[in-house]
Amino acid sequence: MKKSYHILLGLFTAALMLFASVASASACWFAFYQPEVPQSLRK
Image (cartoon, rainbow, N blue to C red; front, side):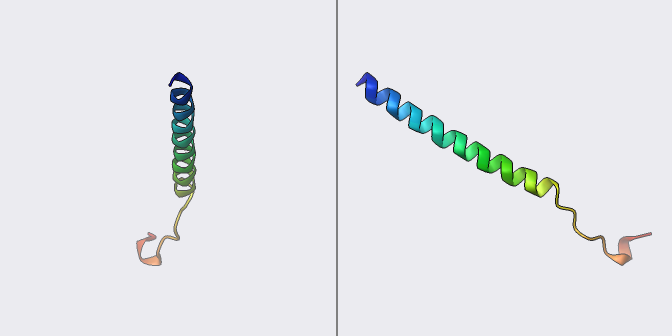
């Protein structure tokens, strides 16, 4: 029982770390995106 608990806890931790790395990578990609400013807004 204790061994299966540790295995499940390890898998859950790995899944959360994968989710966190994917979420942070996508947030960093969006932070560097700067669209072209239209001519009508440039003054």
